[in-house]
Length: 476
Image 1 (cartoon, rainbow, N blue to C red):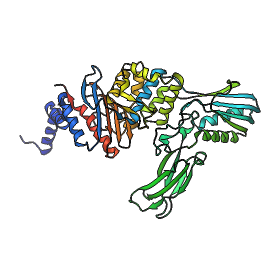
Image 2 (image 1 turned 60 degrees about the vertical axis):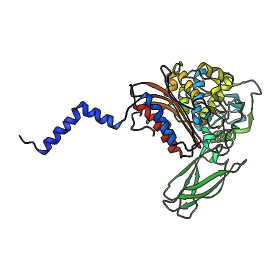
Image 3 (image 1 turned 120 degrees about the vertical axis):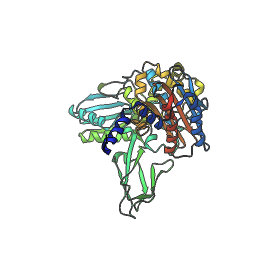
């Protein structure tokens, strides 16, 4: 009996699809599996191949029996960048319930149409925005208010300075290093967008907010360069001033060059936006006073109280999206409400030893933040048994799915199986969290890379190579 070419092809295809041995051989060929005992050498090979003066700290352990699969410099200090947010959010969940909300109360004295006082008490809500002030102005207008003798803005909820003294100068004029004050508005940030023009012409500079932009003085100019030339725009703040110097060249094929910048004086920004909203509703304000503390008992009528999203949503913004402002505000609120001493006490309850960390802020922006990989693993282990464990874990970025891990591990066996927190500073990359191996072995890991001369993308790639090894483990 003779078979046609198409019949032979179909027979071979069917044999391949339905033969388990062929499938197993193909799978083994694509993903090399190895025993736990080989893990240390494979990780060492990756690190030693990419050492070049960098420091690696690694801790990988089984979350069930806490047995160590791999450690390297696990008890030495490293700058952990935004991995510090794990400490901030764990502490917050240990002191506040997941439905905790930050409240901004607003009081009035006097009767419409002429109020004696409008009093806003800042409590550090990082989600507060201009729409809230529109609502306030709308309500006052609907109540018939036409003038306010004194607008009192209470800005003394936080005892600490709005700018952390350990942050670097080049960070504090960027949006990710903006001031953290009691009356935060629009995340205390403003956007400057540069757009190319004709070759040889100055680029066009546009602000997204005229009130915030008025606090900056923009000098200099960047020139439009031909397509496919090197990007060379520089925007620098002069020390001790609110002056920005723009220079360099912007290739014509880059349609938009977006700069997220801090607002130099957020208290004044809050005042100016509120006055604008009131003026738009026909409400006149005679004078504005800032109060660094409650100089007199709160009196008058509580007319509004804005509330933040619940804590379980705030920590998603902190851990998944790595929002520095939210993290700093949350730690400051924690200190104001329960005291700074509770930090060490609570971390001890979670199993984190005091000699394993040194905290300088709530976001990880300070290079004085130090921790050992072991301390981070202890924190992650302790949160597994915490009453808010699910809330904490779900706030982390999911590999290949969302947050700062959205574009990592896509198409790998670990896509959707890593819940982690990233961290990045110049020369520093970090990734810590939880991973489920193909054998459903729940593992805890912390990888801290310091002093690297490689570009951030290459640093992340090396870390990912180490984590991907965990997907190849097999029982032996």
